[in-house]
Image 1 (cartoon, rainbow, N blue to C red):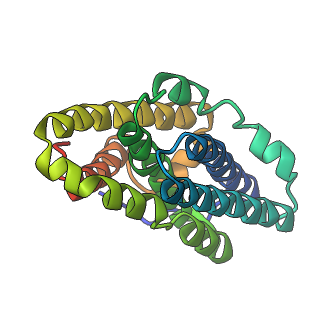
Image 2 (image 1 turned 180 degrees about the vertical axis):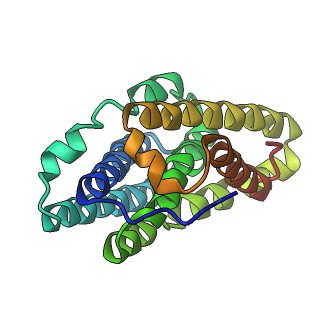
Length: 214
C-alpha cells in the first residue's frame, strides 16, 4: 500500500535532480543524433525540437540544484554512466525503432523521476513534474507510426517486441539506480515491486496508444 513519503533532505533532492538532468541530457544527445539520420526534413526538425526541449529541461534542473546549494556538475556527473548500458543495448537500426526509444525507453526513466518527485519540496517537485511532462516524443511517435502499425501487422509485431525489450532494459536501469542510491527508494512511498508494476503499467499505456501489445 502506498504511503506519503517524507520530504527529502536536500542531498537526496539533489541526487534525484542530478539523475533527471543526466537522463534529459542523454536524451538530448540521442535525439540530436537521430535528427541527423531522419528520413525527411520535417522529421529532422521535429527531432531537433525535441532535443532542444530536453537540453532546456536539463539546464533548468541544474539551476535548481545550484539554488539548493549543490554542485550541479557533480550531481549530474554522479550519473554520467547510468544509461551507458541501456544505450549500447538499444542501438536502433530503423526509423520506427528510433522513434520508440525516447517515447518508450526514456519514458520509463522520466516516469521514475516523476514518481520519486512526490517526496521532494514543493518547488523541486513542481519543476520536475513540469519539465518531464513533454508530449513531443509521444506526439511524434504517434504521428509517424499510428497509421503504419494499424495496417502493417508484421511491422507492428516487430515493434511490439522492440517495445518489450526497451522496457526491460529501462527497468534494469531503475533497479541499478535504486541499488546504488538507496535514498531514492525512500522518496517513492511504495515497495519496489509496486514501483515496477506502476512503471510497467505506464509503459503498457504508451504501447496501447500505438496499438502494440505490451
